Structure formats: structure tokens, C-alpha cells
Length: 421
Image (cartoon, rainbow, N blue to C red; front, side):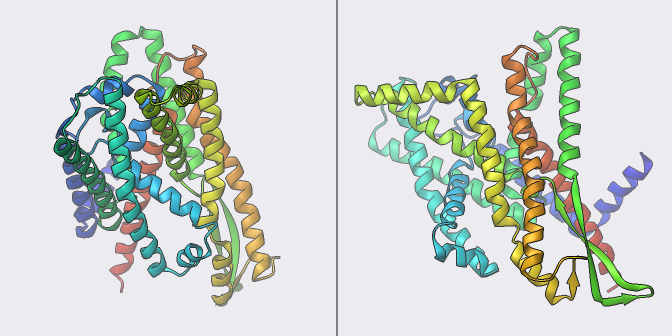
């Protein structure tokens, strides 16, 4: 324990690390202050009455960063930004120009990020109008005049853009990934209230099962998230006594992190939001019937869990092709005079790494998908009465904490090397 506190003290004394931690805490305070400011035209409890207590509400709350129910200026959160990111990730596979930009280095990625920001604006405007129209259709808000409606839409859109900006600031100057960090903050903000409410309703046995399941699940997520396979490499140009210097390429079991989970939840929430909107407006009887059937289908626990399961696995493999470029890695190894023992340099190395990465991802994606739906399944069969957070929320929380830990340790190592330069 003393060693742990000494390490914390040492990290805090490091100016760069302390600055990043304090900056992230400032963003946290700003974020929670914004979440407390109500938006004009929508009563504070209107959105919670529409979505609260349902699986769909939990889904939207998770992807928005836990601020949807409060009807604040940042109510729609990061949903438009994540959806815009998904669109460009998917288009990158079918539009050669975008694929070239993604592979052209920092400048290309900067342009894609700029396009993503541009697309976030119409997505945010659309979502703000859809939420208002849905609330209006169910009679939860009054009819707004044109000026109030524009003000409401501009406010929610601006709030979403502010969230996007804060997430990018954290990615650049704070700790951890910006989007996952803000979603993580929104999720943990609701944990104390959830625990308090559930403890008041549970007996001693249920309480023990409640916390035991949470601990086991967290340990399992940490173990699988940290698991990796190390591919041995040798650098023929870095010779030491006894031969070439050995090294390794670490390939994680969950190489894509938590992004497939966030993408799957965000994509799943979109058709439910549109279906709610169409049902509330009741424009056409046939459209309303189809929308209601879609809503009932997506609200069905079995179908929703199966769809979430499939989407997480699909996005895991898709995102792997984006974040783990084996061709570039094999080329860099060859330039550095490195090779994998028994594997020819170049394309053979690339195919070998891709084969291993896909096999590991198959196991990791299966685990992520199971954890995401397991709490829902256990609750539906009566094995559990409730959980602290949903399966997807748990994955986001644990992965974000581990990412922050790795980021701080990385900064600490770099700082240690800097002393000798």
C-alpha cells in the first residue's frame, strides 16, 4: 500500500502529468455544470418520462454520456459525433478517396476529423428536432413557436458540439480517449444513485449476490482486456553478445478496445429513436403500424440482445481493419531490419500478423459481446434483480479506467527517459 501511495505521489510531483490530470478534472467540472443547465422549451422530466426505465432509455443514456434524461443543453451528448464517425468509418471502406486519406498519415486523418465535425452538425440538428417532435407527439411538451423551436434546436446542437470539442481537448491535452472519457463520466455519475436505490429494495442475500456479481464481472473484464499475445521479433541490426536482439509485437485480445461497443450501442439507438418519432406523429396508419412493430421488435429483450451481440462482433472485426494496419506494420519491421523468426519479411509477415489478429479478435469480440448482454439475460431469467450498470456501461467504464492508467504510466516512462537526454 505504501508503494502505491509513493507512486501516486511521484506521479503528482511530475509537472506534465499533474497538468494533464488537473486539465481532465476541469473538463469534468465543466461537463457536469453543463449537464445541470436546462434547455429552453423542454421540461426537465419530459425526456426521462419518455425514455426512463426502458432498455431503450438506458441505451440512449449510455451513448449520450448519461445526460439525456436531464433535458440539459448537452442532453444529446456525443451521439451525433459518434454516428458521424461511424458513417465515415463505413464510407472509408467503399470510397477510395476516403481510404487514401485514412492511409496518408496525420494530414489525411486530420481532414477526415474535419469532415466528421461538419457531419456532426446536421446530425445534431436532426436529433434535436426528432426528440422534440417525439415529445410533442406524446404530449409531453407544449407546441413551441418558431423562435423557441429554433432556440431549442440551436442550444442542443451547440451543446453537442461543445461535448465534441471537450472530447477532443481531452484526447489532445488530457488523459485517455476523449469520447470514451466523457461517456465514462456520465455513467459513473449515476452509479451512486443506482446503488443507493437498489440497496433499499434488496435483502441481505440479494445484496451479496449483487456485489459479488459486480466484482466477478469487473475482474473478468480486466483480465480479458489486459490479455495479449506477444509475437517474437529479432532485429538483425541491433546485435549484442550472443546474436541478434530479441523483441516482440504485442497483439491484444481486445485490440480495438471499447469502440466496437460504443459504435454498436450508438447504431442500435438510431432506428429506435426514429421509430419512436414516427409512432408519436401518427402521420400514416401503415407507417405507424410498421414503426410500432419495429419498436416492439427492438424493445424485445431477446431480439435486442441478439442484435447487440452481432453488432459488437461485427464492429470488432471491422474496426480491427482500421486500427491495426498489418501491411504498414510489416513494412516498418522490414525497414528497421526486423523479422519474425520463421516468417518471410513483407507480405508474408503481414498475412501472418493479420491471421493472428483475427483469431484473437474472434475470442475478444465474443467476450465483449457476451459481457454486454449477460447482465440483461440474467435479469430477464430472474437470476439477478438488477446490476450497478449495464453490460455495455461496464465495458466502457473498465476499459476507460485501464486506458487512463496506461496513459499515465506511458507519460511516466517517457518522463523517466527524458531525465537522461
